[in-house]
Amino acid sequence: MTKYSKFALVALVFGALAFTSCSKGDDPAPPASIYARLGGTTLVDDPDSSDPAVKIESGRLAYRKVINTTVGLIVADVQSGASGNLGAHFAPVLTEVGAGNTTNLATLVDNLTDFFSFNTGGTNAVNTYSGLDMVTAHNPALNNRMGTTSTNADFTKFEGYVGAAAVQNGVAANTQLYTDIVAVLESLRDPVVQ
Image 1 (cartoon, one colour):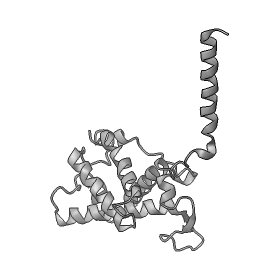
Image 2: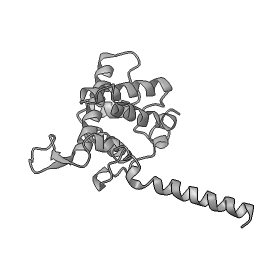
Image 3: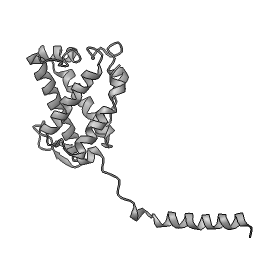
Image 4: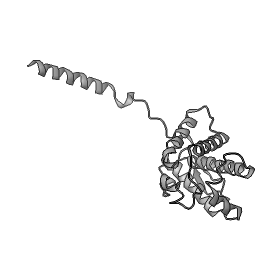
């Protein structure tokens, strides 16, 4: 056997040992998705339904609660005239709600729930997002539902609302889950801020 053949044989043996010593049983389990950590696909009673037979996935319900709380925080700041509030961004829907029409607000909440559920591990059909891509959705020239473009400061403010809403709904700020939720939001900064 030549010197190179012996070297190749030794490399092959060591490579085989390395691959077989790292069997699937030795690999740590992949981290659970954010959706799973928020309750996943476990069905629970839907508190928004008067029909006790209506169920909702626990992960989806968690997102819906956070989104509803986020909307409430944004509206409270708009109504109080808080500095840096996001009223201009949501002007079309806020005007409608002020006139008693909540149809588009419900659609917005459903779309956001679908978007975050689907993109963080909610794979069942109920979590399918079919709305606009983030660039189009946040460009008032392409989407008349958006009142104005977003700045980095606006986006940071929105992240703060979502973070506060997550905490109000049981996601402690000092947890990996909270950090992961903020990371998902942060990944959207570039397409949202135009």
